[in-house]
Structures are given as structure tokens and as C-alpha cells.
Image (cartoon, rainbow, N blue to C red; front, side, top):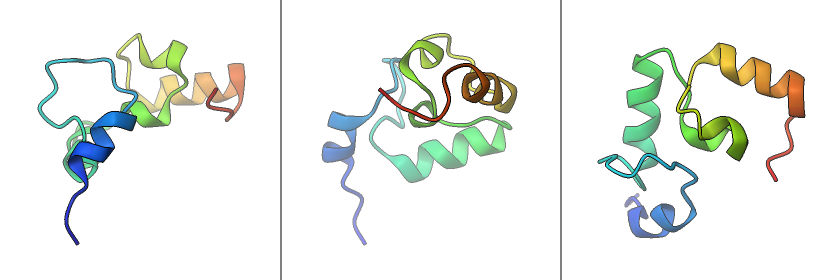
Length: 70
């Protein structure tokens, strides 16, 4: 299966602009999991902007805003 990187890039919620993995979900997920983190697409926009990709921040987000992604 070929990566739909251009299409993924259009829908990627990551605001870290110099990211070389933007649009390449497999590489992004692998990178963040190696670091004990989650990628931007797991976070509500207000939490994503902090660049804190920790699991702890994800848990705090779920406690605060729930799982809705709007």
C-alpha cells in the first residue's frame, strides 16, 4: 500500500511546521511512540498547540474536554 502523504498533509492537525514527517502518518506515529508520546492527531487543537505530546497531557485532555475532536 502506498502512503497518501499529500492527502494526509492536507488533514494533518500538527502545527509544528518544520516537521519532516507531516503527512507521513507511519513515520510520525513511529517517531512519537519511540519517544513515549502521541502524535498531534490524538489531541484537541487547544492541547496540540502546547506541543506537549505526552501521554499524561493526553489523559489530562480527556479529563478536561473528553474525546470530542472539534
